[in-house]
Length: 306
Image (cartoon, rainbow, N blue to C red):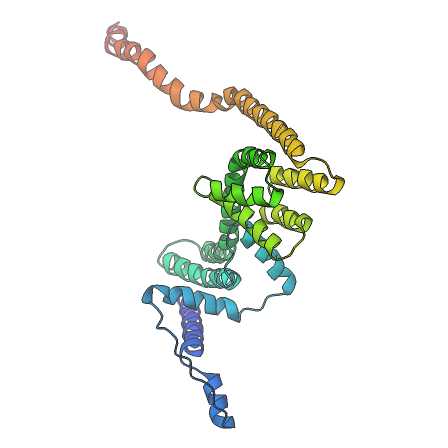
């Protein structure tokens, strides 16, 4: 087992030093220019802050990993749904997966090497650590995307009511979306961000239908998809946008009331387990405890004396 640990550590250290040397010290562009005699303008880059060294190293590792275009598109959509729109986000994700898939098994190997467990269990623990390190960034993305969708879902009724007010006051749909984004900037940042992107796409020359469909695709929120469908149908058939939005707002208000009533009906069933495991034991201790102590102190000595 010690030989296996030594081999794994040697391979990991060798790969890490090789990657760091290739990215930080080896400069193939300068060597090619020196051989070919070509001259290029020297661009002075700002020194990297020590706190960003690990960030840069992870991004460099992610840039070295191969990825298929299909996987890149799916990962890019997941990153957008999580609210991450940086150009290097995919590289950071791949680099984090590769780094954690190597570092966690090494840490687990160092932990289990001193234990007395069976060798099979140690191997399983190391493999489980590698799998956890590889899939942990994906789970983090899912959690962050789900949290962002909940925030959008929470702020959508306010945005819809404000959109109805803006449309009925005489603004067009594009100006109403921009006004809602300005008004909800501090209250609901997620909806503000999405509406701002819609406005930027409209300014870039994209059709309104395509911009709204992109909004539904980016967020993947059910109620927002319904709102986009209402706006697209109103724009296609020429019906009043204000009337359609007000009818949809009433529908969402009724739906929210029904969801609240459903949660209230489930509350009694959900409280059974906390009451049974947390409240009833304390009640038994308070009510039956003094009687049990009195029985032990008085009744048992009388029975023993008999």
